Image (cartoon, rainbow, N blue to C red; front, side):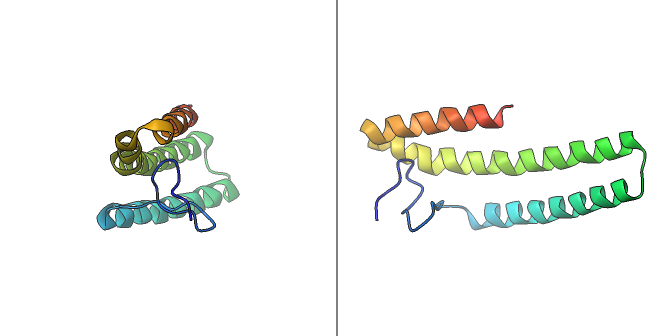
Amino acid sequence: MNQLPCGCGKDVGGRKAHDVDPEIKAGNLKRLRRIEGQIRGLQKMIEEDRYCPDVMAQIASAHEALRSVGRELMRNHLRHCVAAAVRAGGPRAEQTYDELIDLIYSHSR
């Protein structure tokens, strides 16, 4: 099994993160469950023909909640995976820089 370019662990049929703080993981799962509830609430609002600005406000709230989870994941990735690749240097670091640029670009839209 080969180490992934970013240092996120071994490739065992799918990429895995490593060194994720259990409290951060629990917090992210809690946020995602809350977001799941928000989405169900949005479905109900649409079914009930609720006032569009009210629905849009709830959509904005769900977006921000997802961005919050994304920030935590990015923080962990930078702290562990990217830092390890930079320390290693060479082609692994170059691959990680490219991955990071793509990641930042795709999440800044």
